[in-house]
Image (cartoon, rainbow, N blue to C red):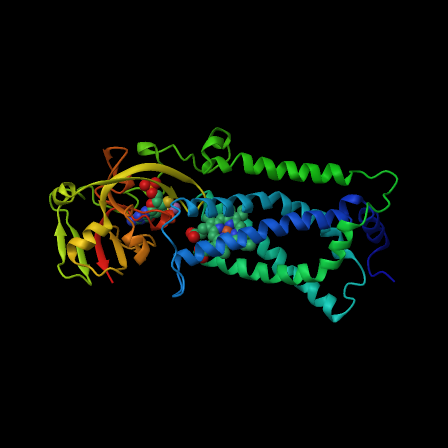
Length: 381
Ligand code: HEM
Ligand SMILES: Nc1nc2c(c(=O)[nH]1)N[C@H]1C(S)=C(S)[C@@H](COP(=O)(O)O)O[C@H]1N2
Ligand SMILES: [Mo]
């Protein structure tokens, strides 16, 4: 006995008989989405651990462009999963009307797990996409909310995959089941369109980090070559509340903390020290990246001058007051790397104010949020 009105039950049965809603279609979409979400989760988790390192974890300074790749992959797989997710919801949706609604305790729990799975997935792609677009319509902070949603979603995903593993395996192995005489849309046509949509989303956005595809990046929120000195800016000096006189004769770089000789250096002092150049990317957590040639004083030279210990770790502080990115940490590997610089120039010119004039931190393999601008203090630990 159906609890649904007869016409709704009949409509459901008709839709359920379409190849675009059968087990095989769901198995193929589910597999693609599962791969994207797994890669997205692992790269996201890595980004979180890099920014909040537990005691056992030391993120290396090499290869210099590794974070650029992992976070580029995070955002690319996240965006590609948008059409896959919508297609999966459309294809699986009619099954919510299957009866009996609950067959067993296990089945009931599995159906219940769809709430965090669907809700969490939609929240992740919506919050991620809004963040890339610089749109913050919510009152909470993005990374912690996105991070919590990732765990909830992946937990529910594990339940879902375990519950559907055997059906999926079978549907993928078995040749096509019998089709209705005249499907309104073939499986091949549907999956082809979904695949094309995922490919298109990737091609029009991935140019924000993959140089050769830059010209195709019509929908990328950032063009990596647009901005002062050919580099984008997330936070301008004005938005960060940096005094326009920053960098005049009163400027001092302080080196303090666990050192034999605290230092207080003027810009002239810094410019008269041996300069070192390095070509390094800014790799923003938002998935865009851009390389530049930076020149300045290696942090390790300043540490040596101040008599810091060999295993020194450093807190780098900005003239910016408050804000999440007004300081960053250098672990002992990063602090000791020859290419971790307090940069004074970019491409041979003094830094633009919006790139951190008079002094900015730039180091290999670091998320953009840790490349602190308008630096005025190193605290050694
Ligand atoms: C359109 C889809 C997505 C986009 C555009 C996106 C974007 C982002 C961005 C910009 C960040 C950096 C946050 C920061 O450190 O400031 C991030 C972090 C993260 N993402 Fe996503 N994401 C998407 C989907 C997902 C999905 C599906 C998952 C999990 C399955 C996920 C898991 C994570 C995790 C765990 C982090 C680390 C959060 C932290 O730093 O605490 N994301 N994502
Ligand atoms: N003091 C300070 N430094 C900062 C930021 C900030 O908001 N304040 N933003 C960071 C972020 S998110 C990125 S991606 C890089 C961008 O550097 P750019 O503006 O020179 O391209 O700077 C980082 N340094
Ligand atoms: Mo960033």
